[in-house]
Image 1 (cartoon, rainbow, N blue to C red):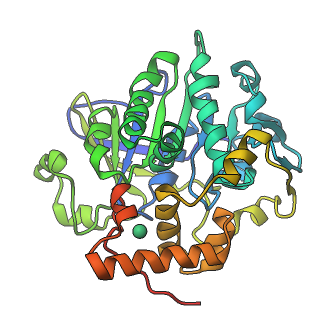
Image 2 (image 1 turned 135 degrees about the vertical axis):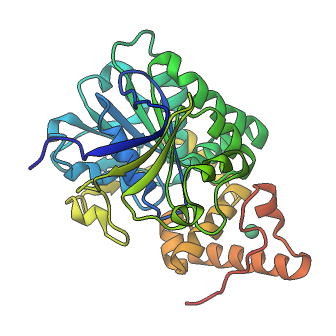
Length: 364
Ligand SMILES: [Zn+2]
């Protein structure tokens, strides 16, 4: 029953720096999917007085905090959509009612996909939370770490509201840059939006580089190869990373895997005792209206494609996105048909999806 955060050791190979957990800094994880960036960023997160964990992927990874020994039950707050009730021993609040003051008593406030009836409700709520509620913090004494696991989800959610991809990307960059003035350090796990990758890297105080694979480091970071053997960066052990500070220092790092972290393929709802404890009710009126007029747009199309590539199961994708299997099938089939005809899928291209030319095998 360790109450101490998992260890992070740094060996400085250029200059000497430190990770400053007293100031609102920006932290970026860089590396392949499955390289263990999120476990590292969780180890960073729990060193701050408070964590607000948002915009995870569909796998509800953030729920793993519930079994961390670092937080007692009454230090955790579950943030949900208006249409959802969550049972269990934790405090629960709908995002729409929350104020900055309500967050103060908790050391870890978390929102996961399972706490919303559908993706519209989740994205709407998290937008309110970041750009209205959190943005109203007038003054601050301690840094509250905002963890945006999937930056792409934040951008998708802004596109839904602004209907404009350029504005949505600018909004994300704005949040990443300006949050420090309101006392929020930010951690971003995955960007997956090639056109803003570099901007985000340039704005990061700390970049944690994990396994980069055969593609290697992006050009603007390739100078690191003068200090670290390129082969060793291709596939280093899961506990190893390189830390680049924006002020210059570089370190080799090693961290202890957080014991609570969600394992791949683990049913985390079950593991933390929430399976069967979530009740989905009626969506609030304004979302129902949006729902009725809502067709699958390019954002959701790319999500169907990405999710299907991960799990290869239409029923799972349909359940995740609260769509019928028929809709999922239609979109995968149309995606493939367009690629076969034109070499790319127009919806995926519009969303700068890396899968615009990837044909998906259709199984059961
Ligand atoms: Zn497509």
